[in-house]
Amino acid sequence: MAVLLIAEDDEDIAAVIARVCKRAGLTVLRAPDGQVALEMIIKERPDVLLTDLGMPRMDGWELIRAVRAHDGVRDTPVAILTGQLTPGDPRVAEAHACAILMKPCPNDQLLLMIEKLATVGPHGHSGAESRCPVRNPVTV
Ligand SMILES: [Zn+2]
Image (cartoon, rainbow, N blue to C red):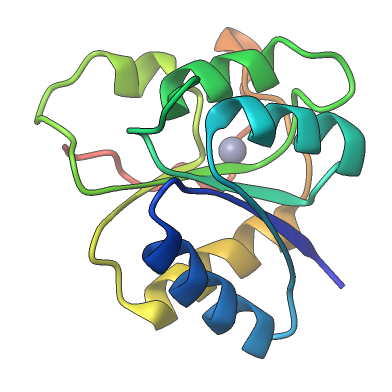
């Protein structure tokens, strides 16, 4: 069974996503900020990370950067779920995320992406050796 880590500071949103994903058979872990999420990723090795961008202590951008720089977990599939992304934000290209989903994201679309990432499994994401088979068109 795939393990999903949700990094989300909004308790209500995290609860809704967790419920949907558990119902679909996923094991769900939750972190209220990027710092806790990073510690959990290193300790629990989730199959997929779903992260918000705006979070206290460590935001989503910093979290993804830290994961990609950390041996052993750097190849974790990552999806961003955000309500605040400006078109043309240069951080999107640098983030090495597999997918970006915009809030509010329909449950079926969210689940589909998470299951896709869990099926794909760990894969390289750094520069020229990026082998991301998901890479949803980041059109923002
Ligand atoms: Zn990827």
